[in-house]
Length: 154
Image (cartoon, rainbow, N blue to C red; front, side, top):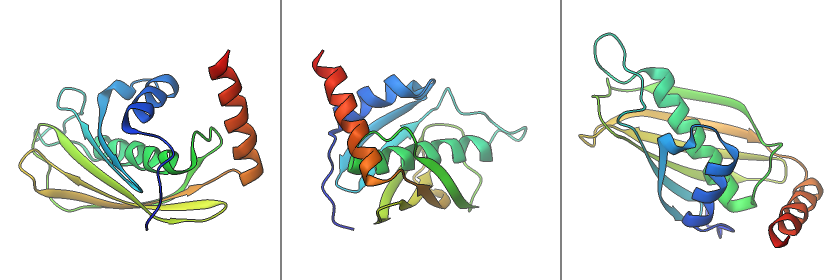
């Protein structure tokens, strides 16, 4: 999907730090149109008893990266929620940094669909996910952007 981001990687980093507690656990590497790349860990990722990265930790990183991918396209939208997701765990993820790539593949007026993939420190694809976000109306998003801009100028 060819789309133009309304936030740079630095703006996305600042926004993420402002709105999500614990967001410092996810480092945004790049924003390229509808695609965001982030690195999670290694210290902040919970491990299973066998020493591999836990499924919930992988899902957290993929969900948050997908959330950022949508946000960089539409701007901050506090009312955006994850409405549906599916995830496939493909391989055990070795301890270490987790690289997540999330791409918005469909952006409609009230929803966004994101394809997210996670690779462990070896470059092995360990999980793939589809995330479906419900979005507030365009009018609500415009009002929120105007409010955010007014607060930023004060």
